[in-house]
Length: 577
Ligand code: PRX
Image (cartoon, rainbow, N blue to C red; front, side, top):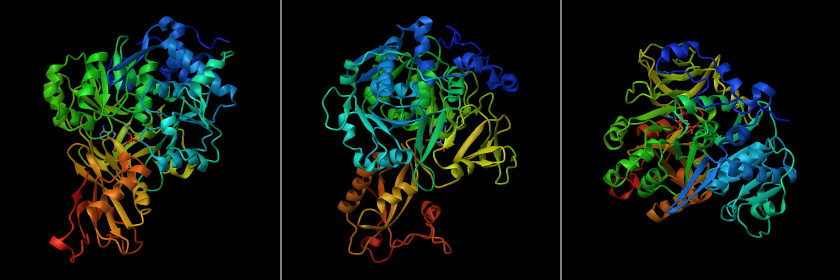
């Protein structure tokens, strides 16, 4: 059965001229996007098909889909090549009994294999759970256990961090290495043996589950945000409107697919629009990043303020390179006006801020390429999205008045559910409004200015960190009696994780002990959750009635009992990072 006619989805088809933002916002309806996907003709759809197979059918098989760079190593993959690989990996999973809706976790570094694994799982109708490559044992366990993952695709090195024996639902492990392994099956070896036959694509409904990202809240463990295949509608459209992707663009999103930016805008939006994507393996290194920009000829670049701030410090290197950039975007944390100025001065381009969340699945508030930028503002809602600043009762507040940033329910990429937690899902809504948890104000032209969070969540380098998760880990260390964690403002990272600790009896404050506690969190949870600063207190400030930790007092440095019996007049914060 052929599920869609060739060339149904063309570049620019259905695109609106956004130079008249107000007019388009009035007229636009998401329904106008539906006919562009196979779903319209058949009632069935599949994200992997729309991202890869469709382009091969339309005659773009030899187009470069992915450029991979790691140090001096560079390789390319065409859409045909990715179709073949996702078919092979998908067939293999299917032939081993993986079914629609099963949770397949992918724990791989930023490497083509990670992208192939994610799309192969989606192709056969599974729900994919991509894990950030820096996660350690506990972070991996929490996610895979909650999700009852039955399949894991990883490599030999990362498999060592997976607590396999504690995961009762895990049935099979596949590694991308070409070796024999005592507990894992080697994908390259299995692929040598299979000959793909039959249809690999599992045709699903727009509202069937597709990808799950765990994200931190201010309380409890990370929650599984499940997105359905319908996210494609908004990701495709914002790929055109916001990323401004054109036929010949080389596009680089610097996020790992374990974060929502790295999947929504690192895989889906660019490939739905048939762009060539760049994948850079390895850690952040300013010189290497400039090399990636030059050697792959990146034209559209999506990154985060922390990365831009780190690159600002290495601006003297820029004249050594020749870039092809024409559009730059930012997400994840407030974009400081001085970073925009830096972009204009050093790269000759304005950096366009965008705002959205794991839960929203795609961009909602943005600076469109053709619109005026007001530095300090995240921009305006895209057509099809209604945003407002409201008070606790749900009433819209006046321009410039601080309130809760809320979005009118009903956009295509809204999360499908919070995994096994209906109550949490419903807690996001007040009437027709989705409440983001961000505080903001709007000016009279509809530009929105981010002012902070309404809760205790920490945003360090654009990564969302729940204080509870770090505190729970800290108190597992035998020297820690009690712990409270806050975000402390930081020039480069936006915020850093700072921990206040009350030591257990018999422990003395020393630099070694603080370092040991930091390493403990880094090795058990992940590097980004590690408190870069630890301060020892005699007691934590708490509410009188319920005894809840008053993180706000710690942030504001009020009622903090540092004790009086310490040498040199108090312990004071010590940055050991
Ligand atoms: O506080 C806002 C901040 O990041 C939160 C969402 O985090 P996460 O789900 O990890 O998704 C990040 C990338 C989509 C938001 O509630 N945030 C995101 N974008 C911006 C931002 N804060 C300020 N400016 C932004 N552009």
